[in-house]
Length: 174
Image 1 (cartoon, rainbow, N blue to C red):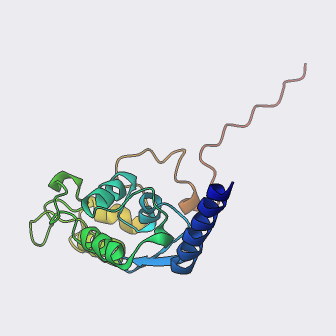
Image 2 (cartoon, rainbow, N blue to C red; image 1 turned 180 degrees about the vertical axis):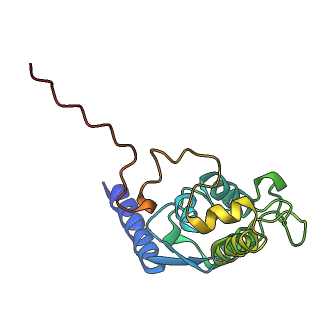
């Protein structure tokens, strides 16, 4: 009985220290991620990082992916930051990057958060400026990749009926 009480007290002390070090919000790659979620799930809240990439980032930074993000130490957060900001430099294959053969530099990159938004906006501006078909369709708010527009994408056209049926002629009287 005495041994059980000692184990219970030790477990209680561990949970108290964990509660003291717990952070509700952890800042990784300049994004606030929730501390109550597992690290592999919390990393997916960063724009540009999906589930598979989050799992690989945890492995490369040697952080337990099932650990709650709120219980991460400062060293673990720093290592996650390094790998998340430059994943290709830390051993992630080039084909996993979201910016392969960049238009300006020609190198393979993986962009996240604000950089990703900025680059996407610049790409659209460039397409509109050179007046290619993709740019023109972006400007008009139409689908760019060959989808049909007769039945879908009606929200951008206002209150227009897609296809009207002919009115049935009145029945003839004898």
